[in-house]
Length: 499
Ligand code: FAD
Ligand code: NAI
Image (tube, rainbow, N blue to C red; front, side, top):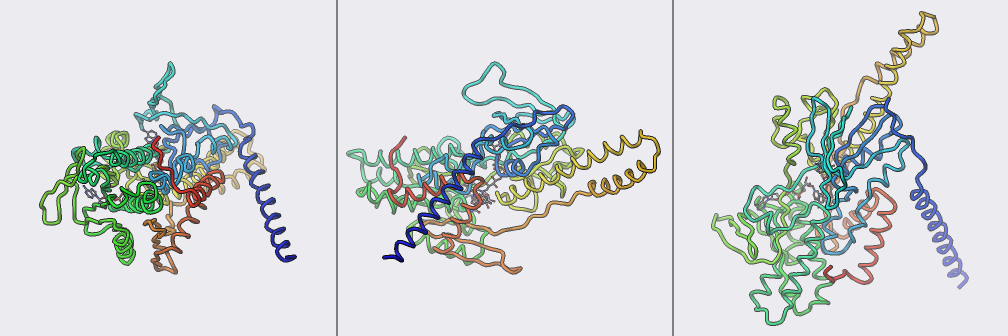
């Protein structure tokens, strides 16, 4: 019993110290100090977006040398990898959102955060026009501002291929409101199926979930819905649970084409065990109010009744991106997005526009990993540009000074430093691996390993997936919120009330 008391004492001490440290940092984070005001002699960086690229830039950027203005229709950063978990209530929305001000208020110089949608970029006049598109607007709801540098990180939007009925009848899985809408609709389908007197055909229709797109988003969402069914719905809707069916529709011959072959097979066999139907070489041709129209591998057309369709069929660029590219027709000809050079400068501009993330067309996949590394890289580029500008200003002052020996020596040293500051290092992407959750407490991972690849899947990979995402979350606050939600779901299950 003495040993037990010693262990208990140790655990208590660690808990108290841990809580104290967490409390200290949380308080520090909550009370940002005063900031330097905007300085008209400094250059202005306008950042469009508050997603992976923009937020990772803002985190790394030293604002001492710049006036920074962030414009985004969302006043927060969304941790997209955990979005499918929100769609089934494993996580609460706020757990994976981080207000942008929580980042910018900790910067040495004030950063303006404006909740607005950029509507036009003029690369010649160096201006951005943006509008308040939210429900409530003040007297001024649209304006144009000048920039010295523009960081263009507006991401992409859902690709519908203009397939009829997609916008009207399907849910997406891109933004927070998409996940919330999917959750509400799915619970609505369940409650409608539970309505007295419903025919068996109608119950089967209402409880058929069709996920379109066998990329990582579609696969992860299918896995999450399956977990919701097995871990919660079987208890609370026992009479309906056996009617719930998940179909994953993919136009290509296999799901997850970017993962290694053995992980594709592992996912397919896990889905088979989980009774998730994978329909490959099958293309969705239309989404109707109560059905989807499919073109099967033999090219025959069938109409399949369903209650919920989630469209996860990839991305395309936004209208503002198309408009901006159209202003530089000679240089911006890539249909996949903005062409940038190896320093992320938009082709066709004088180096004042940097573009990063999903809105660009590079040799990298459109992933959070790429966008965040580009953001961090750009923060270093701005630091170097500020250094270059300061050195140039000091040299200019010396030009006007008398030709004293000291001034000559200083000039030589400054010129050397300037030559170094003018040499930018190109962006280099370091791939950390690909991870995806496939449901049933299993995940898959393709990890770089000694110049090769380690492909692994299963429960251990799932624990790795969880720890990787916890460590990748942008703040301790979000880590605590996500861990708490995971703990709540383990204890009490997911909530099935429809808000
Ligand atoms: P985004 O993060 O999309 O940010 C774009 C920003 O621009 C947003 O803040 C948006 O509000 C803002 N914006 C939009 N229009 C305008 C405008 N007109 N003016 C100003 N601002 C505007 N990648 C991974 O590497 N690993 C994963 O596990 C992973 N999981 C994912 C799961 C889901 C469900 C989804 C949808 C994506 C996932 N991705 C993942 C991909 C990843 O989210 C994107 O590649 C990443 O978000 C790209 O970053 P970005 O900064 O280019 O764009
Ligand atoms: P995606 O582009 O990777 O996959 C979309 C899939 O939909 C494609 O396989 C396409 O063939 C299919 N499709 C398109 N139209 C169709 C139709 N009419 N009928 C049937 N199938 C159709 O899109 P996703 O999954 O949203 O991913 C976007 C990006 O985000 C990717 O770069 C991906 O790597 C990244 N991502 C990464 C994750 C991870 O690493 N865990 C998770 C989610 C996204």
